[in-house]
Amino acid sequence: MTSRSFLFASVLLMVFASANTHAQSARTENTLRLDDPANQPAATFDAVSFLVGSWAGPAFGGTFEEVWNPPSAGSMVGMFKFMGDDAVGFYEIMLIVQEEDSLNLKVKHFNPDFSAWEEKEDYVNFRLVRVELDAVYFSGLTFKKISDDEIHAYIAFKSEAGSREEKLVFNRQ
Image: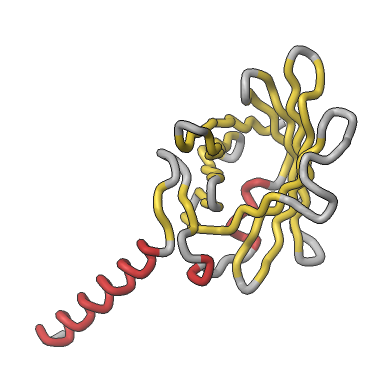
């Protein structure tokens, strides 16, 4: 490789890295924000396959159970139940779908009586920001595979003081 082609390749690499950097920024220590939805990365269900299974662990001062089914018919379905003081605190129905060659995680929350937090047509949409070998970053939500039997999840919450982060430790059941 000539020094001129090396320089050209280096400049292209810097431009590419710079473009990817501007598509995302840190939201909390372990979560990212998708700054430009037009730069959402391409991904398939292989990126989130480590979520499949039944999980439980500590969260929000209580415990949780979460189950993810394998992908079928263009989606992955998950269910979450939070429990504190021997009672259900809330439920979530989760859906990972492939849209425009990327992944989105859609979540609908429910009270213990199964009344929805969001309006009938609404849900929380976590858009994919980055995929790594053992981690997947949605905007405000990160899953990191620690081992086949443990995953750490990080969720960013908005508050008056700024963003704060909660960690959930998933243990395979």
